[in-house]
Length: 317
Image (cartoon, rainbow, N blue to C red):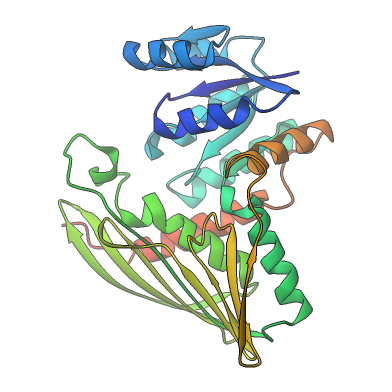
C-alpha cells in the first residue's frame, strides 16, 4: 500500500484525492494546508489518517511514501526538493519549476538519490492522446506539417491570486505549459524560431499568441490566455489529413479527417483525467524507476527551457 501525502488542499488537490480514492493499492494518507477550513473539508470528504498545518511536518512523517504537491508555482521547487530529501517520491503540479536551473536540480537529485520524481503533466497519460500518437505513427494523416492549440480561459483579476503575481503568474506559466508540453510531445525537433504577440496587464501576461518554427520544418501556433475567449482545442495538420482534439489536454474524442472523409473516435476515461497519471506513478515506483517514460525528466527540462525562452519575450510592466 502506497501512502500519499498531499501538500496544498485546493481545488486541484480535491480532484486528485477523488481519483486516488479509486485505487486499492494506494490511499490518501496525509494532507497539509495552512488553512484550517480546507483541512476540515478534506477530513470530512476523504478521511485521511493525518492532517497537518505545516508542510514540513507532513514531509517528516515516515509513513508517507509519495507526495503530491499542489501549491502555487513558486513553491513547487522548494517542497519538491525537500520531499526528496526526506526520501519521498514526488509528483509535482505543472509547471514543476519556474526556471531551467531549478528543474535540472530536481532531476539531478532524483537520479543521484534514486527517488522517483515527475511533473504532473496529465495530458501525457490521457488514453486518447496516446491513441492519437499511434494513429500518427501509422501515417493516417501523413507527416505533421503544423500544430495549432489554444488554452484560453477567463480568469478575473485578483490581486491576492498567484495567477496575477508577476513573479509566478500569467497565462504562460499557468496554462501555456500545457500548450508547450503537448506540442513538444508531437514534434521531436529543435525550436529554431520563437515569436510572441503578448498582452500584459497587472504585471503579468494575460494573453500569449506564440509561433514556433522547428528545425524539421513543422510550425506551431499556441494561444494561452486569462482574458478569453474560452477555447481549448488543438488541430494537428498533416500532409494527408487533420486531427482535432477538444479539449486538447484531456480529450476523450478525436475528429480525424483524411481522403475527404471524417470520423470521430472516442476513448472514455476509466475513472477521470487524473487516474492514468496516478497509475503511472504507481507503476514506476513498483519497478523502482526514478522517472516515467511518458513524462521523463528530459521532457520536463525541455518544457521549462522552452517556456523560459518564450518568457523572455514578455515585458512585465
